[in-house]
Length: 90
Image (cartoon, rainbow, N blue to C red; front, side, top):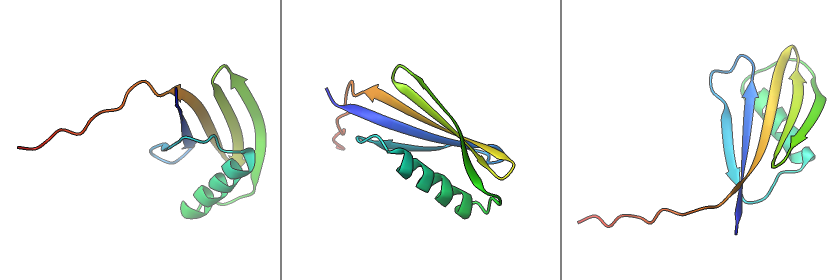
C-alpha cells in the first residue's frame, strides 16, 4: 500500500501553517532548504538554527529557530487508504 507524506511548517507569527503532500519523505537537508526559503519569502530576519529532533511512530518533528521565532516542521507518514473518483458531469 502506498504511503503519503504530509509535511507541515508552522512558524510563530505566521497566520496559517504551510502543508505539503509528497510520496517521498524529505531529507533533513531538503527540510532546511524549505525553512530557509520560507524565511526569505516571509521576510523573517535572523539566523536559522536547528534546535531539536523528535520522533514517535510514524511522525517526526524538527524544531528550528528563525531569529527569535520558533519554526516546527512535522513530517507524518499516512497510509493511502482510498482515492476519490471524479464525478461525471451530466
